[in-house]
Image 1 (cartoon, rainbow, N blue to C red):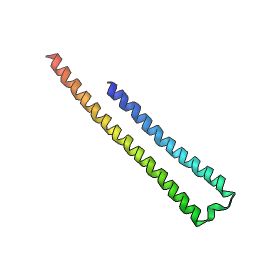
Image 2: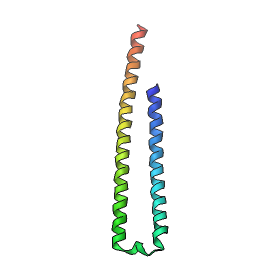
Image 3: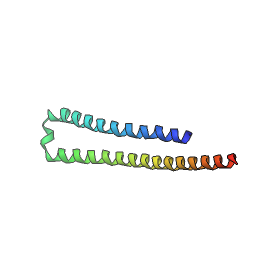
Image 4: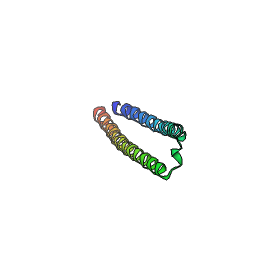
Length: 96
């Protein structure tokens, strides 16, 4: 049962992190726009390229982290299935 609770807690954390990521990306875009828009830099090709590279790098880092979390979630799912199987075997064994 502890494994099931751990999985549920980890799943909730995973979903919260996804929501936070979206909020942070939006906030970053807004702040960058506000900060750099007044300087006239946002209309230059060099700026747009640098910004794209920066966003791509952040996206890759985030996707790596999300991949790690997904693998961990899958591991917990497998462990949860094993716990259930052991519980069934134990129940069958002790009932005879």
